[in-house]
Amino acid sequence: MSEAQIPQRGAAAQYEPAVEGEGGESPSGEQERRKRQSEIRAVLRHLVRNRGAVVGLVIIGSFIAAALLAPIIATHSPTDTAVVDRLQPADAEHWLGTDELGRDLFSRMLYGGRISLNIGIISVAIGILIGVPIGAVSGYYGGRLDIITQRFIDIMIAFPGILLAIVVVTVLGVGVTNVMIATGIASVPIYARLVRGSVLAAKEQSYVAAARAAGIGDLSIIFRHILPNSLAPVIVQSTFQIATSILWAAGLGFLGLGAQAPTPEWGAILSNGREYIRTAHHLTTYPGLAILLMVLGFNLVGDGLRDALDPKTR
Image 1 (cartoon, rainbow, N blue to C red):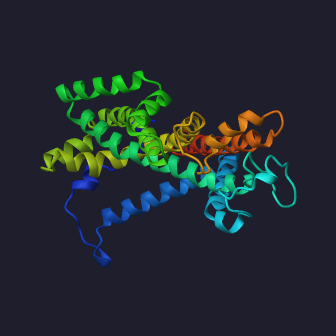
Image 2 (image 1 turned 90 degrees about the vertical axis):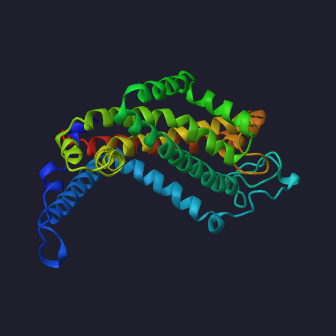
């Protein structure tokens, strides 16, 4: 989404001397607050009218609720083994059956959802915290700094995301924490490029020129005026990136580079179950469906947000 599509605060409204009204708030500030509230309501109305987005929200909400309530819903401990019950199909005691060590698959799936959601959210947060400032500073100042920064970003983009994550995990070591760091670093160039493009368009706007004329510092202009007007594409990309990070994490777990036994993680469960796919297909069916549904949910919400945040579609 281009900067022109995002409502901007007018230069006059931002830099005119404040005239105090009732309650100590300037009329321009009150108008701006009402404008933001109206914009948020318009986005929410458009989002709830999008059936795909509503379905995605239901899917994501269900997974989040199951993850939060895992200690209450789980019928067994996710790590307790019972070899005598290994590879059992679904029954009244084990709702999704048992794995190769007799562990309850339903309980492991619940706790695995916690891990996948944590990886997706935290890795995206890492990507935003690193990539957004890099892209903002690079796009605003330009020149040699922009050239050096973008060549480094080009090197990172040259590697597929999952391959870059594998390299980082190989350097840092296996484990859930390192998977979060690896997938977060792999998403940095995406945010850096996205924000750089928004800043390049925004810095030519009149409200930025007015801020410079008012003597406001560069960093204040970037983080208080330009970035708030560039949040829409970052929000949309973050929704898609959570889904991508969950896929990357599952892939790393499948390769044995993610969560280590006995930690219940969907990719690792899927990897362990492939040896028994002919005799106990539930070991691969349920984690595969869980990954599919969670990724689908975030993608549907991302599509809905992209349309809702675009004034042209509203």
